[in-house]
Image (cartoon, rainbow, N blue to C red):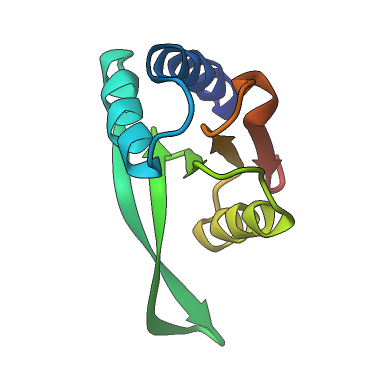
Length: 125
């Protein structure tokens, strides 16, 4: 499956979760339920994936946690905030760069319009 095909299924799953739960819950709630929904749609999902930091070809004991990694290709960064900020986009882009992945979706569940709060972030796609 391509990143775009995965993204299509993910978006459908996000809509399902949002339509059933609505806005205003903690990010951790959306994460657990979205993982369940993604797996029910046949996708391979990993959560809280540790992402090491390399600098000058040396690995440092600093790890970032990717919220959800789908099919080992698409990173999902979940938020439940009043509004997305520039730092959220930069964070996801850095995760993409460090992991050498091409597509990430930044998803804010704390909104009245989920369609406008699923943002694509790309790294050489």
